[in-house]
Amino acid sequence: MTLTDEQKDEIINFTSELVKLPGESGDESKTAERVIRKMKSLSYDEVSVDEYGNVLGILKGDQPGRTIVFDGHMDVVPIREPELWEHTPFGGEIAQGKIWGRGTADMKGALAAMICAPAYLKRSEFAGTILVSASVAEEILIGAAFSKILDRNDVDAVVIGEPTGLKLGIAEKGRAGIEIISHGTVAHSSRPDLGDNAVYRMMEAVEKIRTLPRRTDPVLGEEVIELVEISSLPSPGNGSIPGECKSFWECRLLQGETKESFLGRWKKGLSGIEKVELKIAQINLESYTGVNMSMEDFLPGWITDNNQRFTALVKKSIGECDRDLALYAAPYGCNALVSAGVRNIPTVILGPGDISLAHKPNEFIKIEELLKCAEIYGTICRTF
Image (cartoon, rainbow, N blue to C red; front, side, top):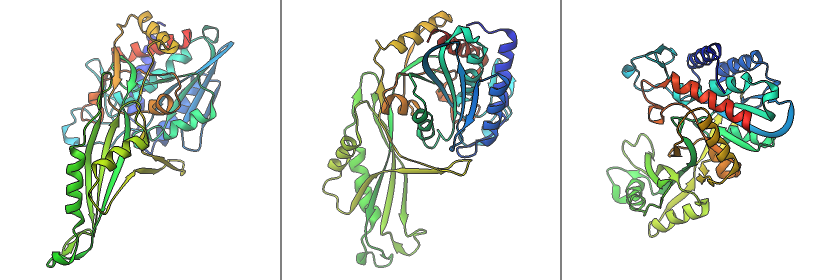
């Protein structure tokens, strides 16, 4: 697929417009409204919004065929360290061959490309159905909202537009949030002998988990088990020995790990420590529609079979767009964990931008890469 100059300008300007619309997880309404207007202006056959606030656009080819879904999330993470930004975080500035601002790479550039590119095709140029999903809350509840789209549509293949630098994502680490809760006895801090300090028990548990052997995989590399938060009760703790302590761990999982196998390793590592509770975290968030979203924070990793028909088709599409093929194993979690890891739907991750820029000051996307990505998306639709 080759874009016209007018189409290129439209994708660039639409990306900039989306970047100018802040929208953290649970606050994507303005972005959703803009996506709806854009889909309608591009003559999508159907445009709908579900109870979570996901926007779904549908394009139908002249001939029957399979169904492919392109998914891009609308939410962005908060601005941190604003003093380090050289461009206005939500300015959508176009300079130096780049578009600057929060969400350019992660992932409003890809979202703009996947909304526009399929709509540029004539209905005679593709068969079957193209779904474009603009999903919500991915930064907090990976896959929870996208699951609604997959529940209601019989999908044959999935493209997730997370930033890969146009490398073809054929594998991804899973993720889990694990909580350790240690219990003790509250007492006055002047008489620690009358209490049982839950923090000391947690310190022992933390050291046990830090020395837990890590699994490795030739494709995905080493799993990640990282402590990110500790808190205790009572809080504030002035004058009191803490009777409870909680630690939260962010984990990146390898293929084949299950809840039972992963927690089993932790329980074995914590053996001998009394009054310690272990559980998978539960995440809750209210959507901008007012509906509560929730998920258990455990999603398995996945690796695509290189002989899979859809993977081969995407490889061919990349080549047809004069882009060298490079394979990619995603170290982060995204909505592909639901489509590929949980549901075993043929899935690839493919998008413009550098993941190392995501969630950081001075995020940007290269315009050349953005436009090439749109060409690849369109070619995938035409050949699917």
